[in-house]
Amino acid sequence: MLSERLATLGLTLPPVGAPLASYVPARRSGRLLYLSGHVSRADGRVVAGVVGADIDAAQAQALARAIALDLLATAAAELGSVDDIAGVVRLTGYVRSAPGFEGQPAVINGASELFVDVLGEAGRHARSAVGVSELPLGAAVEIEAIFEVAGEIRLM
Image 1: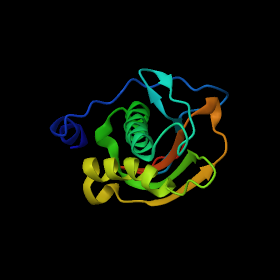
Image 2: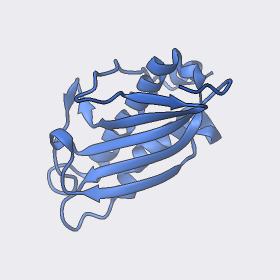
Image 3: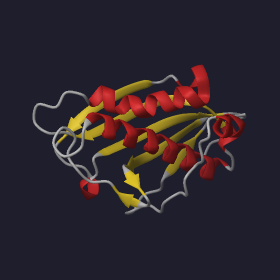
Image 4: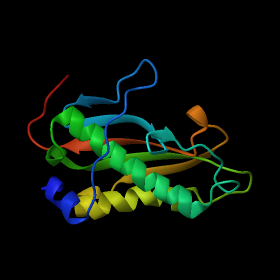
């Protein structure tokens, strides 16, 4: 069970934040759960900055790892339990990048590696890592995901 695996790894899911605009944090279709973009946060506040200028790649990778926990928390809130997550299908990661910064894949690996740590092979996923000039609220990193849901197919 994922809840046991999280405990074994010493990880705790953070509280789920409210959407910042007119959208839902998650939308289920059949056995897929689409998660809206989650931005980099620490202590409930957006971590703003430009990766490769005022935030280094290692710090940004840690932010991506924290976003992965946020995504799991949102999925658990939507599904009723983290144990209802069967796997990760796809991630799209956006890194607010300084000119010349090319380490976007390494940054988003923070999230990818957390999903594999927690879900094993079911955490491996398709992925894009994109450098951008701006993100909402000046966030350094934003990640959206598609998860596979355990159990029967359900249409919304």
